[in-house]
Structure formats: C-alpha cells, structure tokens
Amino acid sequence: MEEFDELRRRYEATPRQLDDRLWTRLREGGTSTPRSASPKGFPFWALICIALGAPVAGAIFFYLLRVNERSYWLLGAAGVVLLVAGVIGLASLRSTAATSVAIDGKTEEQLILEQGPLVLAHLVRADERLWQPGAPPGRALLLFSLDPARRFDRTYLDRLVSEIQVLRGGTMPDMALVDVWRMVNSDKAEGSVPIPPQMAGNASTFLAVLVLIPKWLDRGRLTSRSVLAIAHPKGRRLMQV
Image (tube, rainbow, N blue to C red):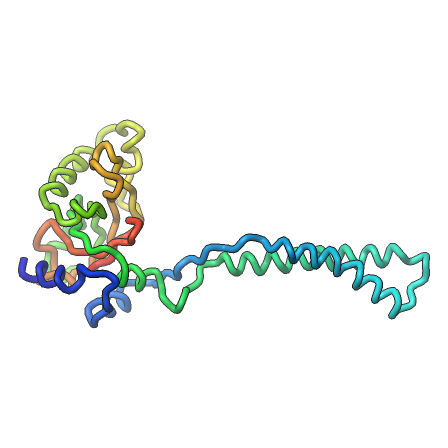
C-alpha cells in the first residue's frame, strides 16, 4: 500500500515528467508504436494545376519538336500521361502522409506515459505464473475506469469484476455484452473493449489485455488483484507503471 500511495503521488498529475522509472518502461516495454497522423484531404488545387499544366506541356512539346498537324493525337496522349502520372503521384504522397509516423519524435507509448490518466486496474484473470517469483512476462486481463469518480474506487471495480467473471464460459450473452464475453473467454485477445454503460454505470470503463512484466511489480510478482497503470486517454490500452 505504501508503494501504491507513493506512486500515485508521483504520477497523478498530468502532463507528467518521465523519470527514470517511466523511461525504463518506455525502453523495455516492447515495440514502440508511432503515433498516427490524421491524413489531409486530397488537394483539389493540385488537380486543377495538373489539368492546366498537361495541355501547356503538350504545347511546349509541339513547338520544340515541331510536331506536324497529323500528330495531334501525340499531344493528347502526352497530356493524358502527364495527368495520370500527376494524380498517381499525389495519391502516393497522400498515402505516405496517412501512414503512421512519429509526431515531434514521440511514440504513442511516450505520449501515454506523459498524458494518460493514472488508474487502478483490477485483475479479471492472469497467467498463474505471474504469482510466482522469477516468472517471465505474462498476459493479464484487467478492468479499469477513466471516470474520475471510479479510477481508484476498489469497491466499484471489485463488484464489476465479479459481474464480468460470470461471463466466463457458458453461452454467449445478449448482444450488448458480446465483445466483453469474447475478450473474457479468449486467450489471444488484444487491446481493449468498453464495458456497456448499462453494466458499468458510465461510458468510461474498459476491459484490456496487458502483458505484465513481473520485475516491475512489487516483490517481482503479483501480490494482489490490483495493478497501478497508466491508460490511453481514450481507454485503448494500458501501460504498466
């Protein structure tokens, strides 16, 4: 409990400075994920320039090469080729811009550690070896909430975990709980899914898979059913503190 309180004091405020502990998490936490840049719209002005530039270029070829009147088809073909090439080039540039790139040199993980809310995540289930000293990293399914009143509410999280545990095994529930049911019953699930508001009481509670690294845990292993973590601001993932 003392370490939990101390970590909460250190990391509750955002934006937070990345100290040695968080830099270690960033370096050793796995492959970095470039932050996605929002693709810009197709530049309509560029199409106009190409449409005007193609016949102009054709006219230049006409005068330079002294093409005779019977070869006007050559001008048309040259214009079409230039126009198509320009469109393909612009489409390629737009595709490149839409590709995930690091903005200001920061990966998604770094931005999460700097700006994401600190949360208390409750275990729904975890690899049994995570409870043993010296265990390798293992998967854990965790429940957490971004709701300001619920982020550290152990009673709320305990109650909701109990309700989610009921979904393990058995038949598929009603459609509102299908995504939760699938994640609870899958050993290969990734990312996170929102808990339906009718179950969670808010629209900001999530179920997420996190690969826990035991050496970063108190005593080098799981010692309780709660894990302090930093969440993506939209609940898409967790990162271990």
